[in-house]
Image 1 (spheres, rainbow, N blue to C red):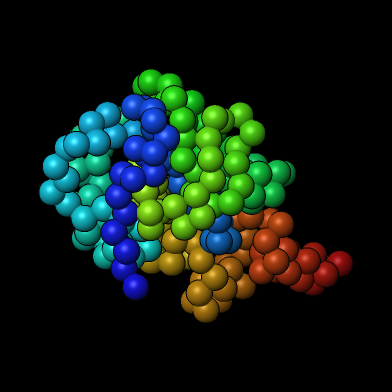
Image 2: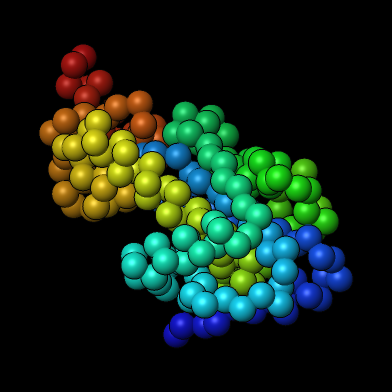
Length: 208
């Protein structure tokens, strides 16, 4: 069921500068996890595009929304690399990317709304479960994070076309796993993720 987020949660905080924060890319086997923070400086603005949970939008809808959001809000992105994910674990890396995104904003938000049930300890914030379905600021952040990460994966696919990252975004599709078996693992893979770790171990066993 498609839901329509609003500014109700933002307005309930009592603050003017409220940042919605979300991430994209926790599940893929490779590439960074990307976070975005978005502040609507004017919550009375007329929004002529659809803004909701990025997973409920088509690629065209996301691209159209991305264009509008980036021209009408205060926003920033940040990421944690595959090696950082391996070092920290994906949850801590996601929270670190969120903190970096907020710190990259051109102004300091008075309060942050974080999608999910965990909070980056450095931020003055509250967690909102399914926040991208409830808060327009978080929904906008989900779109920025998704579009930014997809662009990164498309660029990496130009260097490593054999993995199909421009189509699978690094998720473990059958074709992607087959390509990993055929072409091996490179520095963009998350080596602590089970399908990647299994292939590294298999390769090491083969060469023993």
